[in-house]
Image (tube, rainbow, N blue to C red; front, side, top):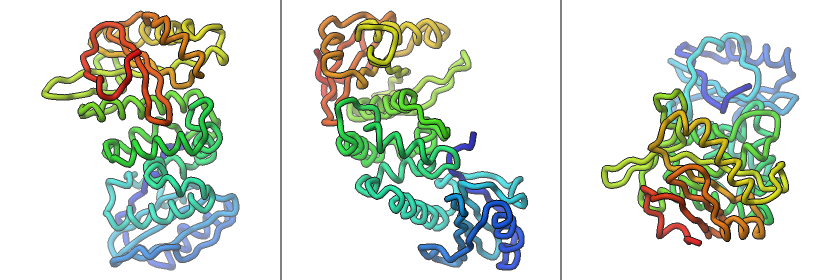
Length: 334
């Protein structure tokens, strides 16, 4: 499976003749390609070209007298196979800025509705334009309201736009965007669970915590976050139950218990304590959440917080055990 978009770096001299010989002709022979001037000027001392393939793939190439960068969601010409790969944040500013302008314009031409969410578009650009995942990731936001039941695409995307616009996750853009996946198979359940991590990141940062995602622990697992405040750190793991209409468990309470049991008897049990569990019931309808919040079942792990977020920004929750994070200002306790 292809990974999120990254640049390939060629520390060599390039010319128009070499570009056509080593890049354009192999692409044209394999896929049918057009080589053209880019939509935007690369600026500075760079030259650049677009390659648009007959199958809808795109590649970008930018170079100066000493080096070149390639980015594409298509097959890579053999002359670049052994080159090093870099994220947008790891290449020169002018290179990254130009490539992102090209790709964002292309994205918004294909999905005009995404233009209303500029930071969301930018944040998920490495997967929205990836080789295998561009259709599935866009489809998840377009057709599945980012995992919220009984909500519109506009409500859901608008809320995550407001979260991402704060910039608190920009430093971890590739780590977090990659969690959405670059598979050609649309999996709304897994993608919804990924968005739970964005919701928890929002909860924690709004409460004044600094977060670091993907914390490796001695068991070989990665824990979703470390949250730090006033010199104290807390490990946080997130899970998201399927609603009872989508699983064998025939009640909302059973769905919460079974999902938490899977997490606590596996990954958290191996770690042996010291982790706070967040159980996200945002996939539950109003009546299903009412059952859970009314009964407030234990989830087999302490400390834990069970919550449900709505695109309005309202988040209701209850806790079991003494939470080591203070969230009184960011959730409504039920």
